[in-house]
Image 1 (cartoon, rainbow, N blue to C red):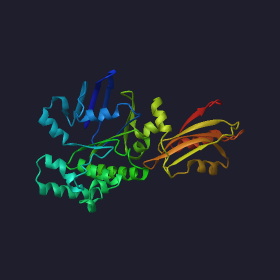
Image 2 (cartoon, helix red, strand yellow):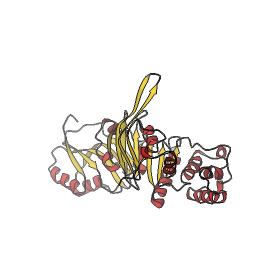
Image 3 (cartoon, one colour):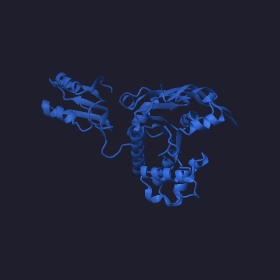
Image 4 (cartoon, one colour):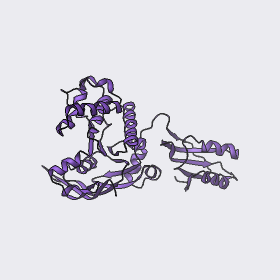
Length: 342
């Protein structure tokens, strides 16, 4: 059974300009333990979708089933109990500025009626988890953006949820801080077994942390699958655009373009299962003692595996082309012939 099941979800809003269809028949299955990315451009409907997952927004039509429970069938008290199992973090932290870090984390437990001593003990445990044990008495204004988000994560974990919903949780952070927060989320997923849903407009976030991803456009899911599949073979126009615009990170992306066109035959190779540390093309050249021209390359390190593609050109008159192609196939690369005009 899926941890979160979304079936034919629709959500409309009444605006001064008429009815806005934010979601148009969205269906998803998110399994226990997934780090599931939902990505799209601004206005795609992704934030509305995640708010429907815990019924902060009530769908106009369709079904949301969380841990086997249809949220539409729950009364107010039951829905509040279910929400306690679904922590949520936001782009702008939403901390209480007049309370210190310890009291911010205790706040949801206090609302639930947990004893003050127990709430404080739980808060200190979570500060240890997020690496802020020395900031218990600090106030939000004294913290950096990354530290504020760590406090927000600790607060979201206070009631021992099994699901963590992250709505653009790293969008307000610089790249280095973003990386540290994503590492923390991966660690929490690994140690606590949480299912994590990440809403983002950054493909680099999906590449860094997610195992599955849904791409949204204009209120619909236009593509869904494993992150490896999407990066290797994006099927939708928006998917191809997001992958092509994926921000390079130092050390894990090589993008090359060769302007001078030769007259040899060309092939496109797709990296999908090769170690990112294996110099496949260099080894090809050393093995066959024959150069190849790299016309274009866009490869990324996704979980230690090379993802992306490369356009190669064999030297005019080469007699080893077929053997070289076989060599590449034997190393798990997919090959596609490329016409002259490409």
